[in-house]
Image 1: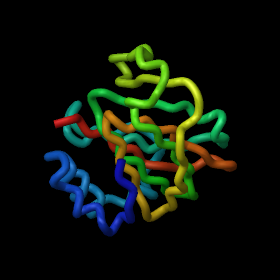
Image 2: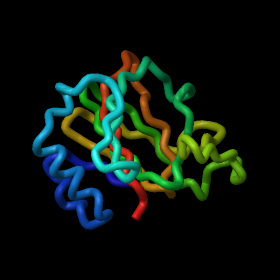
Image 3: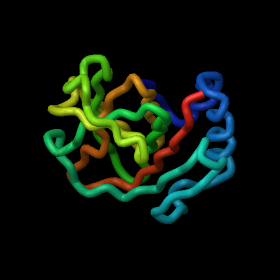
Image 4: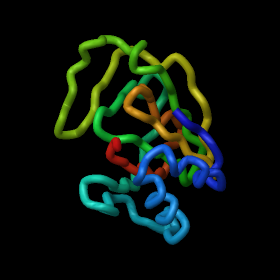
Length: 149
């Protein structure tokens, strides 16, 4: 898991060959101006989802993980709480995997939470269980889905 300010995103482009494309996209597009919906950037390898979440408590935020994609999550309209637990510590260990949606859901709450503000981002790799969307009012956010290299 990585959490940092947007101006530092370029420091992370070496982590995945597609992160450079994300960096270029961020320089040339205003995420706040995009409508809620799904955008294809580079086939199945790189997609963008602009979402509007509903209010959610820590107890309501489901702990999830992905196998085939890395999430780069960017709150746009408000502070978003994001939970974290390494997947090796998530239960049940044999959680059902939905290959079509590339998602596993785990039981219980995350071990820790951090507030991610507009102007920041969080990167969740397949080994990072995460419980995003914790906010009392909902949040408009960008989620880049980056194919694991």
